[in-house]
Amino acid sequence: MSILSRLRGIRHTRMLLCSLIAVALWLFLWHASPREALIVTYKLTQVMLAAVVTYWIDRWLFPYARPEGYLCEEWRDRIGSGDWPDGVDDFPVVTESKTLFMVACLRRSFLMGAAMLAVELGL
Image (cartoon, rainbow, N blue to C red):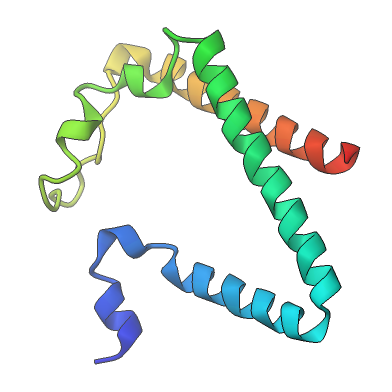
């Protein structure tokens, strides 16, 4: 059994392969040009910092319009409960609030994306 087939059953390692590829490429860049690797690290740090700051600004500006507020049940209660049956949403949204849920998700995504882009283009 290959490593990838073993990892497919683990829910929390969805991006493990992408992360390993990114680390391998960064190590290759470090070997080829250490100065450029530092610049790449600096830029990635800026993007991550902009994302975190914007996430918290969104939470402070819209305390009653968070995306998780439109779910049918508390999502933290279902995290460790095991597998869900096929055809069932992982975290169902209240039927009357589907549009509000969509708008809240899009608002947060656009704010974070715009802030990340602004930080990268401005610095």
